[in-house]
Length: 115
Image (cartoon, rainbow, N blue to C red; front, side, top):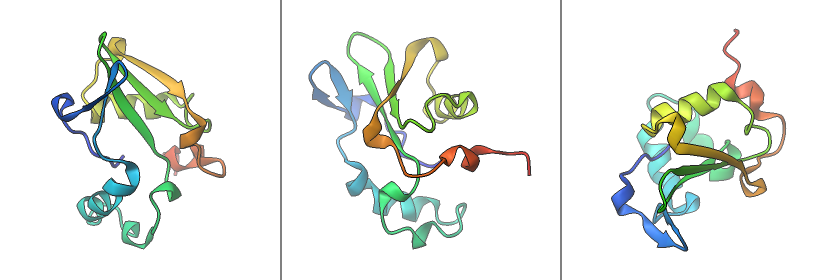
């Protein structure tokens, strides 16, 4: 899993939520640089939407919402990885599908650890 897990207090208010101030396109150069040693080939990916992505938003009434694409929303192992990566308790999060984060193809094979 790669991403930016920043503190909630840097979030910007949007309606009743706090969201990361940077967009995926703005963050992509930093992510590529940060993960190039552990993710060989990441520097060859030009666009941020060439890999599965989502967004973690803090709802000001309490709890987090994780938005993700159709091919990944029901992947329980991925949900556990997200909770661990962002240090979120399972009872404080809702996973929601958002087609904006859907990437082409069946991406569930990226998370198959049977090899």
